[in-house]
Image (tube, rainbow, N blue to C red; front, side, top):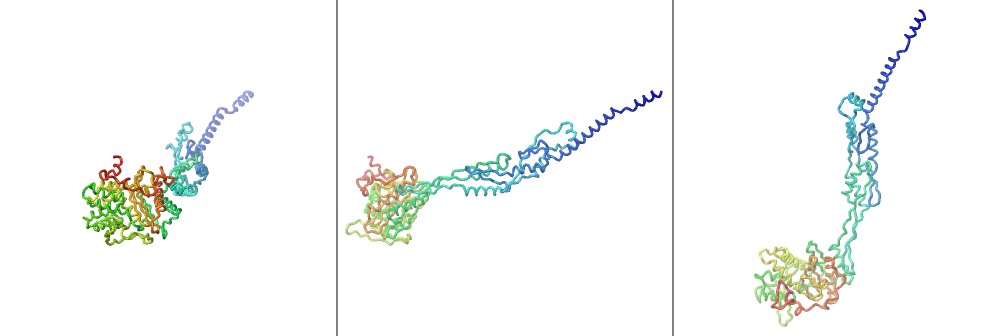
Length: 540
């Protein structure tokens, strides 16, 4: 019995294996649950694993750690290349900063599904967490003004400005300066902005643009003309030599004026003012006889014809002084305020009674005295003004037509004036500085130590220009071999400026030794005279 009882007792003392195992499993489950719960809780304080902020993966990081990561990335300098030279741009130097709080808030919100803690934990345990990646864009700003100033400093240091225009005295030509290059700041601003916001590509090849070469201006031409005159021993503003030059660009309206307000003897150039006033007083288209007087006056510079025109303007043979006064009044009314004629032209015949009327008040440059004719004076800028008024009338229905709105002038009359003077083919002075066959409407004159020529040049390229040149030398008798070539070379320099594509690189050698005679050469026959085609008679 005892043995049996002991055996039973031993059987009753066995360990409860299943309960213990069950308990252990429960404890393990609780432990694992606790670990998962703690890990999940800790992960709740980190950024979601699928978040990229400003192009940088920061998933699973603490917010402070994530911020440090992108701050370090975007604080790296941007390398700028000016041509091949690297320049470092420190983002901090232009006030670059990221909006950390905004981006952290967006990153944290990316992991917030809107569910409660336990629901999110259960989803985590069941493997049903969010799998959608989130890319939080960069939020940053900087001071664009500081960046622009930075680029302007670079531009000031490294840009190559275009070269200054110049001239060649041997060919009497002007030329543009060499082209330069400069930083395109506006485009560079956009490219640098993109690099500042890129975590990887932080290199910018700065955009460049060619700066146009400075083209020669009328100031360049002025310097050329003065230098040329100096090289010929003719001081333009001297005590015994004076050069007065007026040039107007009829396309842009720009002017070159070298002592253009100095008074000179007008000589025969005053006949342009006589022509203008004659047309003003004509009630109808000029008759053949009236046209013949004009042609003799303007082409052959015939003084007798000029006096007859002024008589006609005055109202008859005994009214020449009224005509003379009318010519002066008209010239001054249209802007030639230092131009006048007060006496008839001397015909060089015995017994001619000249006489004169009082000269008007004028105000030419008082610093130079060219000993001008007291009865017949003008200035280079006055002659340029008269030609400009005719040109504007002929081409734009302005000029003389606006000055006299009562119908005294029309386009046809102004075109006839220019056409008539284009027949002045003496082959010297302004004309000799142009390529053969170039159209120029001009009037020349010389007296004592003065020579002058003024007109409008019509180049094939359409860049028309007014030019008036007067030279004076304190001598009793003019040296044509000295003064005339100076006028011609000034004309050539002007041509080369306005027609650079077809320059005259050297002085013409095909010009006559003196002016070509008018009669028998370019004065039309009476019966073939046509003011609308002054050279038409040559083909007939």
